[in-house]
Image (tube, helix red, strand yellow):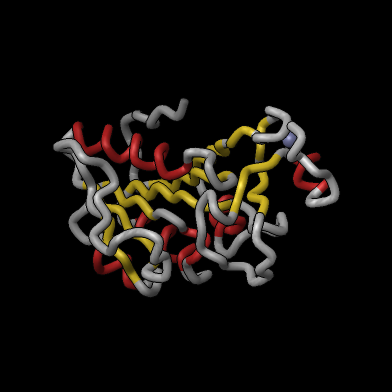
Length: 196
Ligand code: ZN
């Protein structure tokens, strides 16, 4: 489990990346870290790309007194002014943001903000997704979370697309994707899993 670094003399903020496939618990891990910071009286905020329309604009990510509202932003650059006054900034679904998010995250960290980024590391084809690979390079801390392959029980690190759509961004949940391990993902539709 990730534990926050705590030593005297830390002069800047830092960047944490939580990545993995769909259904791996990325957002839950992001929220876990933010809620703990909030309990410690730190000011926290979550940003999401406005293009992610699966959830309501004023999405409440949890329902207790520690709930954190997420703010939809169109461009990663907009996060800079929206983040003023916060100690900890969460960025969810970061793979959908533009490449400038890499600079934005570094800027915020320089300003003393702890930046926690969650996103898909690979698209449905297994290709590194948007700004995530670059964020992994510049981050101080990286956590890869995994789902479980429904076909064989291995750890799953791929987001297999069940529909035939071929563009990189197709929003959906269990209706369109399932987590798959390396081997089951490679088998694709060649294997018929329906007898399992
Ligand atoms: Zn499998």
